[in-house]
Image 1 (cartoon, rainbow, N blue to C red):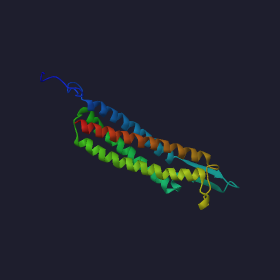
Image 2: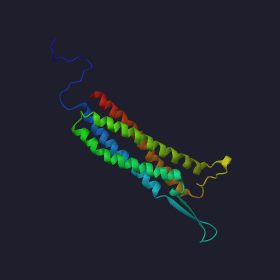
Image 3: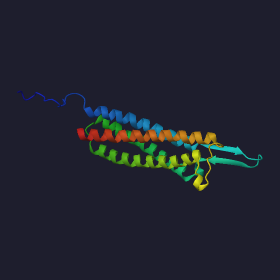
Image 4: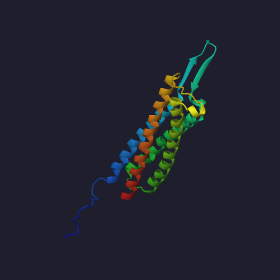
Length: 183
């Protein structure tokens, strides 16, 4: 056989690098995750509702910063969103130089840390949202969503963006590991 023939399963090294497509997908997914986490943080941070009681002078307020878990949710999603915006620089670098392996390893490490942060903050907020919707009879905690309907809808909706970011981070880590293994 000739020295230039290819065997079954080999990939030609001519033309565009196969990791360039992964790098472009990485860039797009980072933008989507940044939008999801920023949207989740903004939706939660702007959530409040006031209910009048017997008179105009006595009012009950529900705000996100009344509960530390929801404050952690906003802080965690804001940090992750900031990280994603900053990591776009490395993502563009990977599109230009698709063979850069050390910076990809760095991104995998930071992506894993940020995945843990966004998962922890979403989980903490999910427990509070569950209590708000269903209450806990054993602890005498009543469901507040019958009274604070708008508040509960907004905090429930903000969880969606955060869990979308969790799924995107999982995909980003897998893509980065595949790109590293191809180099």
